[in-house]
Length: 203
Image (cartoon, rainbow, N blue to C red):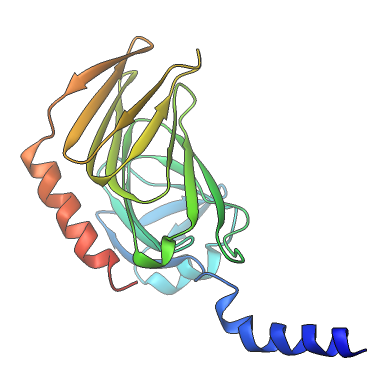
């Protein structure tokens, strides 16, 4: 009984801190509706999208639109022109591992916030897999090519044949025909990532 009582007290004390924030829609630009789990959801107001956004759901963002989502273990992300599947278990106790699937040609920008410490995030793109334990980066896919730009932190890229490449701060990598190629970071992309990083600090 004393052990059980002590455990109950600990759970009560730490309950507010045992869960990461849920998924929160920050903004939707350039779209009147998006697709969530195969259902069209209007974007005139954020509340219908927020109500439909659940762990493990799949969001399809038009090519000319951008949806900004916060949460998923203290991460801020901009999704443009992709089908993105959120982790099915966004609530983690003392760290954890998150995984999402990215489909289609488009762009994902991601910035981890200070609360992300101790966690890892894995993005599966079919022809590549990316993982990070904390970084600010862009991954853009078009016509079978994947461009990766990292503003800060590190990102590991892995190809189906098992080859890997670490992409460090201020550098870029292009994945083309199943191989890594050097790539210069675009100045506009740098500015967009800096803006995303500044917004991520407060989530």
